[in-house]
Length: 210
Image (cartoon, rainbow, N blue to C red; front, side):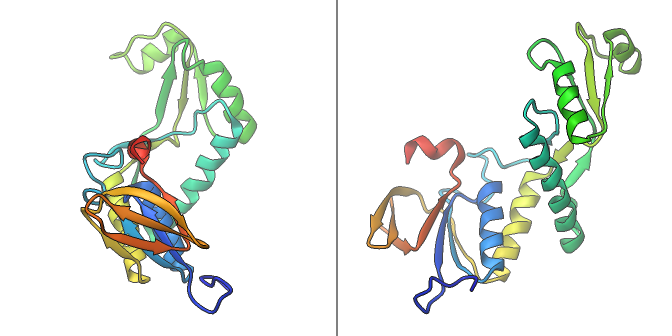
């Protein structure tokens, strides 16, 4: 049974970090009947993390087909979330990749393998299309790429999580996570303590401090 530990009570999951990863995790767990507590050191979609602002890149151009498929599947879920909430979360823009580091031809082969629409063109053709840019290699363009409004997405998913019973604590800086019996104890820098059956760490760049 979703949300059950098998011991006759709802399972309690503690999510550390209220960025995109933490908000999505909290929403999905809460919507499945789990008890969820979110701990955020600042505020959701904080400027101190990476899930802030209105333009975080959403691209399919990866050299591993596994990641391309993840993005493809995630886009279906982004679209579903937009339809469900009415929030504008993803703006399609297309994306251009060029240069020796990005290796456009290799990326194009991966996109072809997964079935993602794309164009591979020479530098001169690309400069004709985008005259404000200069290229020194082949250029890959894939129109399905875009940008995610990270702050709106975080708040939208947290609102859904809270609607399903999740609790969000702001200004809760985690100092330690310890195993306690069959679960875990999370302690803040000022001595507060929360126990749960599991801990999901979505701390991003703050992970080394934990």
